[in-house]
Amino acid sequence: MSAIRDGRVVVVTGAGRGLGRAHALAFAAEGARLVVNDLGVGLDGTPGADGTSGVDGPSGVGGTPEAHGTPGAQGTPGPGDPASRVAEEIRAAGGEAVPHTGDIATTEGAASLIRTALETYGRLDTLVNNAGFLRDRMLVNLDEDDFDAVVRVHLKGHFLPLRHAAAHWRTEAKAGRRPEARIVNTSSGAGLVGSVGQGNYSAAKAGIVALTLVAAAELRRYGVQVNAIAPAARTRMTERTFADTMAVPGSGFDTMAPENVSPLVVWLGSAASAGVTGRVFEAEGGRITVMEGWRPGPSADKGGRWSPAEAGEVARELLAEAGEPGAVYGA
Figure 1 (cartoon, rainbow, N blue to C red):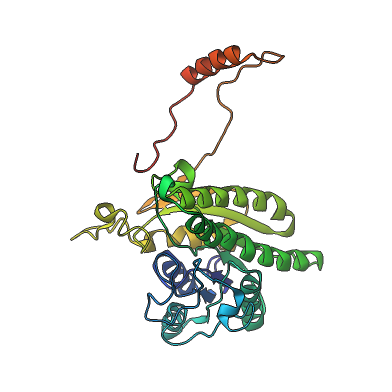
Figure 2 (figure 1 turned 120 degrees about the vertical axis):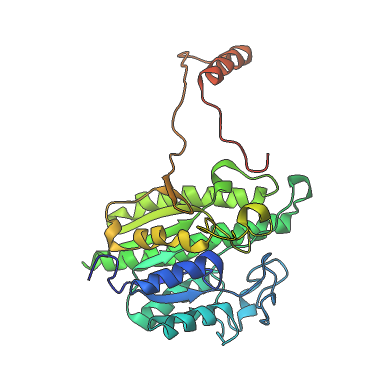
C-alpha cells in the first residue's frame, strides 16, 4: 500500500459541500476513513438554507452551545443534513465515513469532532480545516456582528480543532507513539493580498496563514506537519461573487471545479508529504504555486533615531527600490 493509500483517518470540516466535499471524496477514494463535519447552514451562516432545521443562533454559526441540544454535543446527524449525505455517498462507494454536525468554533464542538474520530476509528491522522461562510460588506458598512461571525467561523474554527487534535498527537508522541500527523488549513488569496468588500474574511484568512506558521513550528517536535492552501474554485462562496470567472465552461477543462484542488490536499494530508511543513500553496485548476510570504526588502539603518522628516525621506528612497505589492482583488 502506498504512502497515500494507507487507510488514514481524516477529519474534514465544512465537508458537506464544495471544496470540503471534494476533499472528503478524494481522501475516501485513496482508502482513508472519514469524519465528515458540516453544520448545515447557509452561505452567510444562517440556519435552514439547506432544507434542514438549522442549529445556529442569531450571530451566525453556532450561536450558543445549547443550540446543539447539549453543550458541545456532536449534534444529531440525520439523512437530510449535508454531512450525512456526504458520509452516505462515501459509504455507498465502499468507503468508511461518519457524519459530525457539531459547531467546530466552540470548544466542546471541536473536542467532540476529534473525539468522534478516536472513538469511531481508534486513531486520527489528518485534520483538514475548511469550514467557513461569507458576510461581505464594504468596511464602512461592515458591522461588528458580521465581522465577529466571519472571524469566528474561519479563524477560531481553525484554531479549536487544531488545538484539540494537537493535544492528542502530543500525548501520543510523549507516550512513544510518534505520529505521522498532518493538518491542512484553508486560507485564501484574500488573506494573502486582500479583497475589496471582504475585510472580515481577508483578516480571518490572513490570520490562518500566521496560525499555520506558528503551529508548524510548535508541533514539528511531535510529528505533526501543518500547511495551508489558498484555493480558487467554484463554491457557494465564490459562484455568486465571481460569477463570470466561476461559470461552468461549455466544453474542455473545468478550471474552477473544486475537485481540482483536492489532489494537493490529499497529498499534504498523507504520509507521502514527509518533510513539508509551514508552507502555503495556491491551487487553481491545473496550477499549483508555492507562495513566498513577507521577506525583508530594501532597508536602511542610521544607527540612531530618525527625525520624522528623515524617516519620510528614507522611506521614499526604499520604496523606490522595492517591488510593487500585489493588487488587491476587486481594486
